[in-house]
Amino acid sequence: MKTRILAIALAAAILLIVPTVLSAYQLSLLVKMLIFAIFAMSLDLILGFAGLPSLGHAAYFGAAAYTVSLLALRVVNNFWIDFPAGLLMAVGVSALFGLLALRTHESYFLMITLALAQVLWGIAFGWRSLTGGDDGLPGVPRPNLGLPWSLADRIPFYYFVLIFFALALVLLWIIAHSPFGRVLVGIRENEVRMKVLGYNVWLYKYVAFILAGLFAGLAGNLFAYYNGFVSPSYLSVLFSASGLLMVILGGAGTLFGPALGAGVIVYLENVISVYTERWLMILGVIYVLVTLFAPRGLVGLLRERFGSRLA
Amino acid sequence: MTFWITQLLNGVSFGMLLFLLAAGLSLIYGLMRILNLAHGSYYLLGAYVGLTVVRYTESFVYAAVAGTAVVTVLGILMERFFLRRFPKQALPQALLTFGFLFIIADLALWIWGGNPQTLPKPQVFAASIWVGNIVFPSYRLFVIAVGIIVGLGLWWLQEGTRLGAMIRAGVDDEEMARGTGVNVSLLSTAVFGLGAFLAALGGIMGGPFVGVYPGADFEILLLAFVVVIIGGLGSLKGAFFGGLLVGLLDNFGKALFPELALFTIFAPMAIILAVRPTGLFGRL
View 1 (tube, chains in turn purple, yellow):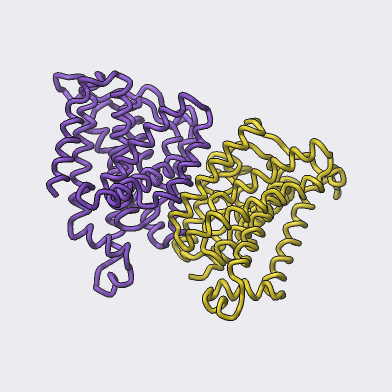
View 2 (cartoon, rainbow over the protein chains, first blue to last red):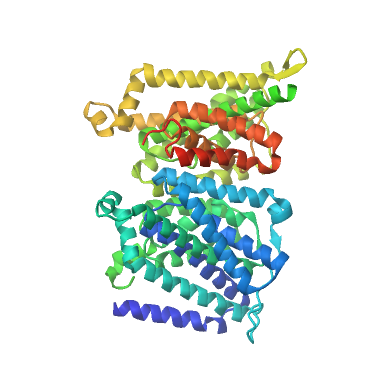
C-alpha cells in the first residue's frame, strides 16, 4: 500500500513538472496519451470490471467529438454549452445502444456493439453536408474559459487536459471500488449467482455501460479541442479495437493498466510510423502477441514479478 | 419494371454471396464458439490470389482452385496454432482475429496495391441473356446457382451424412460427442477449413461484380455479421435467409435511398434484435 501511494505521488509529480522539460512535440504526444488514457479507462469499466467486450466504444468518443466540433464551428464556441452537450450526446448514444446490446452476451455483444458503432460511422461518412464526410471537420477552435491563460497555448492546454485526466481517474477508481463496482465484478465472475442474490443485473450493467459512454465522451470532447479536427476514423472499428488493445495490453480491470496501455500504443504508433509505412501490420502483430503472451497485460506482468505491492 | 427485376436479381446474387460468408462464420461459431473477425480477410485473400492466378493462366477455374486452397490452408493453420488456445473466450478470440485482419489487410495492400480491381468473368458467362427486353447478366444467375447448390450441399452434409451428425453432436454437447468417440479436435479443424473455404469461394464469386479493394474485407465482414445477427449465429437456415434479406435490403437501399444506405440494413437488424436477441433461427 505504501509503495503504491509513493508510486502515485511520484507519477503525479512527474506529470505536474514535465511541461518545463518537454519539447512542444513531446508535450503534444503526452496530451494525446492522457486523452486516450481516459478513453481506455472508460472502456475498462465495462470490459475489465463488468466483463462486457465492446467493439464499438469509439461511438461515444466520436459522437462527443463531433458534437463539440459542430457546435463550436457552426453555432457558438462556448465551453459551457459545447462541452456538456458533447457529454450529453455520448450519454444519449450509449443509453440507446446499451438497450439493444445488453440483450445479448459475449460474441453477440461484440458483434452488435460493432454494428451499432458502424451506423454512426456511416452517418459521419455519408452525411457530407453536416459532417464533411471523410474530409472531416477541420479548424475546431479551442474554448475560451475566461482565464488569464489561453488554451491555444500548449502548456495551459496540457494542464487543462491533465485536470480532466486526474478527475476521470479518481472518479472511475471510486466507481470501480464502490459497492457498485464490486457488483460489476460479481456479474463478470458469475452473472447467475448475482441474479440469484437479488441484484438487478441488467440495471447494473446498463448504468455501467452509460457511465463508460460518458467518460469516453469526455475523452472525445478533449480530443476535438486537442486535435482541432475530427474525422470518421475516430468512430471506426479500428479505433474501437485499439481501445480494446490498450485495455488488454495494460491489464483489464486495473484502470492504471489501460491508461498505461494507451500511452504505450500512442507512443509506438508515433515512433514506428516514422520508420515504416507498415504500421498496420506491426499493430496486427502486437494484437496477436499480446493475446498469446500477455493476456493479463503489463500490470499483470508487473504483479507476477514484484507481487501485488506495486500495481 | 425492368428496374425492379434487375435490382431484384442484383440483390439476390449479392445475398447468395453473403450467404457463402455467413454460412462459414455460422458453422465455425456453431461448433467452436469462435467469432472470427478475420473472416472477411478470407474473402479478400481468396479474390486477390484468384486475380493473380487468372493473370498468369487466364483460367477462372484455376483461379477458384488456387484462391480457395490457399485460404483453406491459412484457415486451418489459424485454427490449429492460434484460435485453439482460446476456446469459448470471446475477447482473446476477437483480439487475435482482429490482429490477423490487420496483418492480412496490410500484406494484401503491399502485394496487390490500393486500387480497386475486378476478377474477369469466366468466358462462358461473359454474355447476357435477353428475355423480352430485359437483360439478365448470366454471371449473376451463375452466382445465384452456386449459392443454392452450396446451400443444398451444406444442408445435405449437416442432415444427411455421418460427418454432419458428428458436427451436430459436437454443437449440442461437445463432451458427450467426445465420449462417444467423435474426434472433436479434428472435426473443429475440418469445419474451420470449410468455413474459410466458403469465404474464399465468396471472394472468387464476388470478384467479378463486387470487386476486391482495401477495406472490402471489413465491409464484407460487417454485412456477414448483420446476416448472422438477423438469421441467428450457428444456423444454416439463418445464414441463407438472412443473406437473402440483407442482400436485397442493401441493394434496394442503395438504389432507392443512397443517403440512408446503412440504415436500410441496420434498422431491420435493430428491430429483430429487440424482438428476438438470438436472431430469427438462432438458439441460445
